[in-house]
Image 1 (cartoon, rainbow, N blue to C red):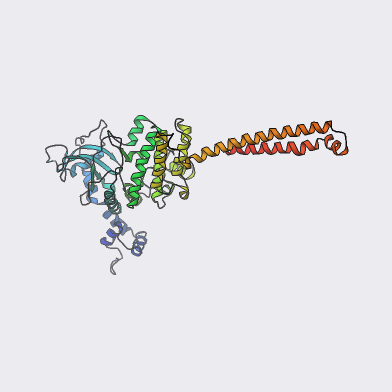
Image 2: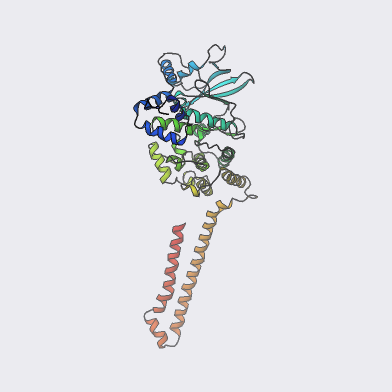
Length: 453
């Protein structure tokens, strides 16, 4: 805390603040002090920034070295030269070593760092090594939280989740070791093939929902479900979810540095877009957004800027799937809408419930004569038939009433003239007040039914 002779906080207290290990009362006091003390803020930035990592990266980037070889036709971003000092180049094969792992090339790069392809020498199996970039690992809270959630994700054992072999938080830049999955991700598949078939949409969605359900049971929320984070195993088409915990760690890093929310706007839930607390239903919304993309080939919310996308997520509904891809049934939009309800209380509550609905819908698609469509998806269809039946019934009644009115009018004309008959017929009073009134009522009913449909 603050020493009597020193009005500033000690470094250890600031480190505890970054690692989120301070009690709440002390945290509030430190944050209040930081708002008025430039010196403590500067020291906090130095502690969070891991200056040695930044200096090392700057020095490496300033060198004109040959690019790192990659297993891709795309040129590698020169900024990835910061990887070089992390590798032991004494290895005879590949690019070098990270601890005992032989690094053979680069699989990909993104906001969190870089994914390297390597070999585990003990088991002689291919692995993917995810190295966190300095801008993420340099923020103490983000680094600590990411490693905690990576360790939590490592405890999840499910066929639809990429297993984590090892979490190494003590390295200069921490890294995670996972199996190397050949086949690419869903984003690459959509870019290559466009919208998928109905069977594929439901099958992939079911696997994602089952994986999320397993993660949620362990208390782990993904927070960044999107096509690029869904891998497809080559050969058997098995789906695997990757990058658990990344979005929350990125939130910590970017909020510390720029005050912006990290993540992929097109697939965020409304509560996540607003910066509110999220729970498992946020992942369910993102699952619905992914299904929308698979069925239509485009994200559900599009705009000229990320902020405009975030506003659309909270204020609008996406176009119906069938209006974009006519090959998709109308009920699929009803299914996806249950996952993408803006009001969280109306949304499908759990990934397990989402999986159950997808499983039943897939069974119907594969065997429509034996398996009926889930009731919640039949509702709109039943309403439509009920409305059509009502229209036919009311129309028949209207025709019958008109015939009845005209017939009785003719009888009245042929009947002996009397005061009771003569007065109404002079002004067509009976005809106006009964038949016309009834017909107008039927017309209003038909108009209301048409509007509801």
